[in-house]
Length: 81
Image (cartoon, rainbow, N blue to C red):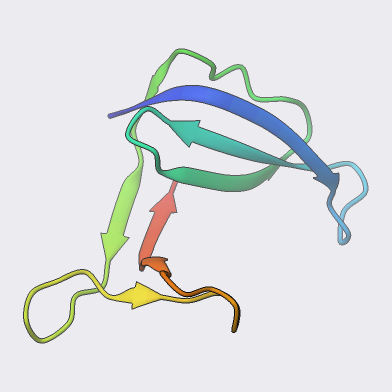
């Protein structure tokens, strides 16, 4: 269970103009982005998600970098609702 501490409205979805992107932030610092037809009423609630992570040969979570300017990267993790 992950506790939601922030729900931020983003841009309108380019493929479906009835949906909007929202960034959901959890108390452990993880973030989840998804489209919704209306703002999810998740603030200060606990939600259950399926989390998948990729590990390297040494048992550490793989680090991915988004852009050439990204020097630190972040853990390779998928959050599914």
